[in-house]
Length: 80
Picture 1 (cartoon, rainbow, N blue to C red):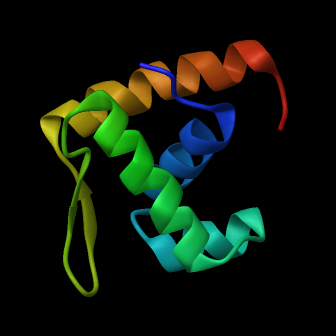
Picture 2 (spheres, rainbow, N blue to C red):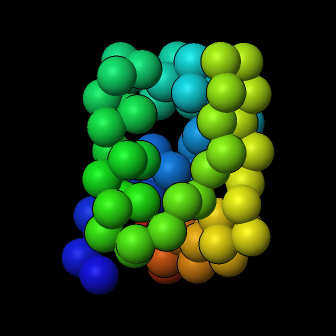
């Protein structure tokens, strides 16, 4: 897997906020670019990380583990 820090940051923000809209506002990026980054990450890991509907975002089991790993990586790389 070749996930970028940008993808991990995007994913972690969405997972914590449980909202693409809130995470995009928090990161100061468009919702579409955030969605694209998360979708790219899901393709790279070969698993669905988030259950989505029009109003809600929930972590899948794989998503919970991916969030744990993403937070470890992001913590080790410092602010960004």
